[in-house]
Length: 337
Image (cartoon, rainbow, N blue to C red; front, side, top):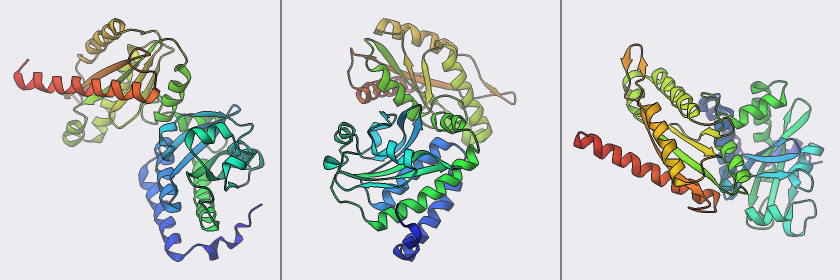
């Protein structure tokens, strides 16, 4: 067990002030747990000068990447068995663990370390009440990358996260996991949950991904205020869900951006028919306090495996197609069509 009592002498005044500013900044992020965790991993990476950081939550025998930065960012939503992993052992024992060379450490998941190129790492438990519900991990592509200074920094940060976890989901772990995987405003899946599902369905024969971007949200916020903007975001979420089937995955992956995994839409003709229904739904007007809002959305798609067999590439192609449609919408408006 690591002796954290010496941390106050190990950490410099400058580092402690940075951590205090970090704590203040978290308050400004807002109540959404997914957004908070994303902010935390980026700051943890910055403070420890590591190459990647991740928050993994323990969910039904798996460790799931719920927020990630740096070299680990592309693996958001990754789901690994708790057994045979350093993160799982950290949760089981509720104590900090450090691997200075993962290639020679039999406690780690060797295949996972090779996948994410983590050659050394620190994992520290995130506590809720008296049990660990996940870990905060920093990783490096170098062996022996971390020291006591990094361990103490991570310890102080993890205590702050534990306080947040207790405040957000005081007693129910299930509630914590739901908040970590869903968008607070719309109730839809968030980015990590979207990629978690995408990694799972990549083994299916065919499916489609839609990327949807709201048109006019900035104008709504600037003209009518953020209350109107929130109403527009929630209405966008409801209209997207209304044209999807029950087993489809609908997610909010950005301020004005949404993503959908369509299990039963398996070719470009079916995608085109989905977009027809989508456009009909979004053609309906939206009012805020009897004022017509400039409400709309652009959509693009990609089909697996026709367009790509890579999860990241499928999203990229759908995103590029969405922006092409958005550009066409602007051209049509300028020409008066």
